[in-house]
Length: 226
Image (cartoon, rainbow, N blue to C red; front, side):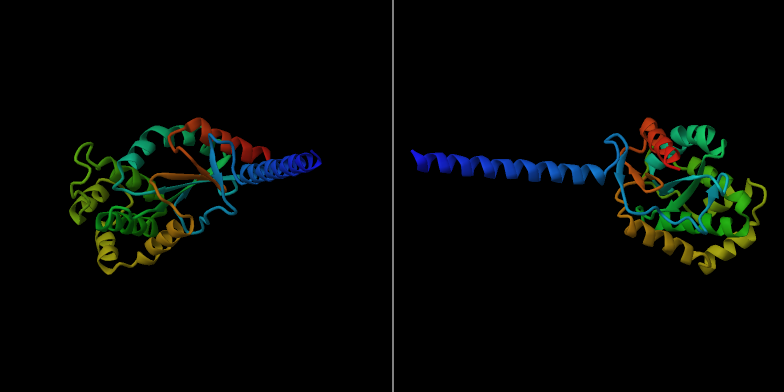
């Protein structure tokens, strides 16, 4: 009978230790994550030096989009979530917003990114209009069609003020801004970006980029910590 009691005691101790270890593991996991509606908190945020950025340079919170000009979801995000983000936080001086190129759709993504970086180098003030206009050209159907061409880029740039299309063509032909595109690709790898768009609020990678409440919560939490 004594032996059975000892065995039972050992069993209870083992179970208790297991439960304690489980609780500790859950706490650690929880500490490495934000609210489940927000996403995962990393140990750093993407650097935005040299990246196209709108908003007050002294804004306390940084929001970054990893996006691809060939990505239908990126176009949808830009048309639905982005305007609200700008109205609520960028225009009010609380957030600065940057775009980092992702080349998930191959040569066309690369050409679009190279063109956008070339426009940014030539005239930063014209970048965001070009950015929006190029996304607007993305077909609503047949997303896999080859629509990003030098001709299309010239057509878009030619409709906008502040862009010298001759200089733009020369920059594209010489790949003069390819280093900037490659820098973005390195960031995509470094931050293990798997989907576009991927949205980060400071160090927090948002789980669902179309969940605006989660984006707002992450921004508001970051502002409270300032």
